[in-house]
Image (cartoon, rainbow, N blue to C red; front, side, top):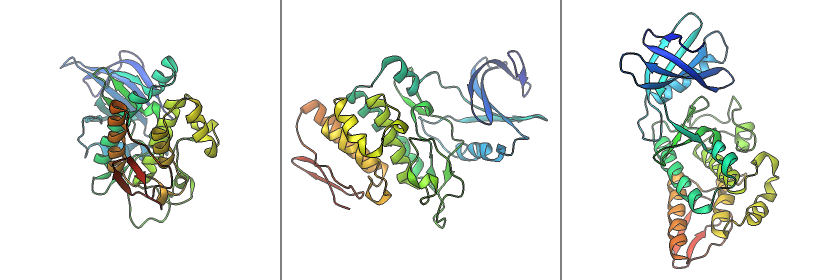
Length: 288
């Protein structure tokens, strides 16, 4: 497709704005309403098209301010076109490249926003597991609000499944269970979140760091012991020892946020096991 082409009789292609393995995303204008939309063009002859169409089936049932809406669906003999909200802004990977390491207080705010959308996704019936949380899939809009995009790897959680049948994720961010060591569930997204926060905090891609070196890298970059402990508890190899759910993670981030403003409290690191204990000295991880 090229600039000026018409999709679905009413969308004029303006430019290409993204490229994936099996699809291309274009910026388009609705010629009737004169508003802008993102259009994902999927090659219908590609065997992977069925996985790309899963994005439509998932997004059409979601309604959250951090998620794009599906507005229309068009097709021709070569492509299927998904028309969705155009979210103007920069990806976190672009911001990291331009600005360098992100300061901790800003990361805490971003982490809280991401927990909010994960709480929403994981509360669906069945829960929606995103499986590819990373800086390039998160857009910071002009209002300062984050937006999660690209649901091509998301899937509904199936309780009876013993392991993932298709290994999907991005090296460095993906949890061990995404590569045959079990099945993805809500804790998989939390592992992805932890590695995303690590990358933004240190400027180092998690694929370039040995897992047992994560704490040292965070310390060298001046990350507080509290925030470092939270990240470590998100990225434990054993899902049963990670922070157990996004709501608990949000609670911990809220306490971190308050401690940044008041400068009090302490954290003792350890295997989290998904349990939360709050005391007058701060957050204490349970042993699991």
